[in-house]
Image (cartoon, rainbow, N blue to C red; front, side):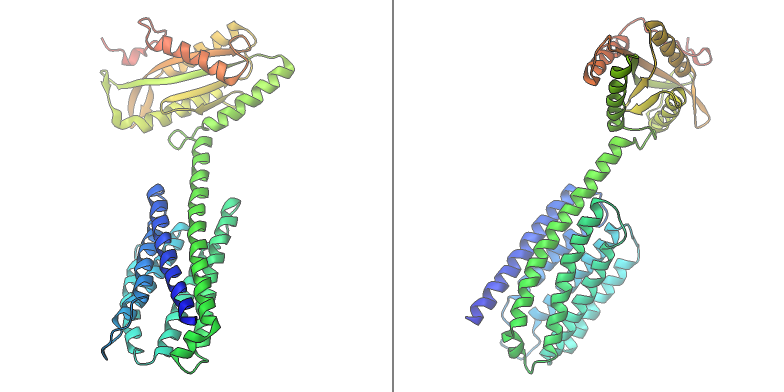
Length: 390
């Protein structure tokens, strides 16, 4: 019965390690640019191979137990990858650290071979080395963070500590028993393997969740702030519009919503230069921010699309005057790399509540007017005299 339990646990270990490898690979595929994730995926694949080798029967000759030696090397390499992945995930990169880890693996295998004739000493060495590496990885994940990251990182560290604690406990038991058979029959041995299986599954799930939480935070940040122009993003525009509509419903004051679309831009002589795109967008964002100042609000809501909220436009005349000032500002060439750049802009506008009482309605009207201007043969936009082409 004990042998059956050991066989079941060994099967569960291989199964759990294989599932972890697949899930970590999937997590890496979905988060390729996230620091540390590829190291976690590599750890899953390497660990699965190591656990499989541990289930192979020892050779019948008097030579070294090569499956055990190679198993130890694979598992140790997997744990080093977990440590490296944890360090990179917590924004602690290093160009030389992983190279030092490559040196530690053959050193570990040689020391493992040195203890070949002393199985208990080999087990103590194995488990002690494993527990130290995993414990360092656990404390790495506990680097001070805020919000959801703190909770999920603590969960990652908890499961890593479970693995480290199980390995340390078996190492202590190995130092107290008289033979490898006694260690195999000791209840702590089976409990240790069970804890390792559960901790591997928990760690894999928590890493997946940590990547999800971080990706969602990055998405929210992109929605809140555009990385190219430095303006607020679409999510911030939605919040401002909702607040402005609620304020104007109480006070009855009108406001307007403008859409600004960058069609194209030209260097002197009418030459286009797509290589300057990000710098042109950043300069355009600065100009819109200058126009909005503190009274109004400007944001980037699309690839080449910007939104502007004019908080106080009581009449159509006020709106036309505000739009004329914006057109005049955008008609002036912007300076990029000491070169004047002429912008080709289309504008669309909508006034609350005349054109709509919701953000969707205002945006639809502004978009229609912007598109009509974009495809009109007689655009109201006037080029600067300094860059007019003949």
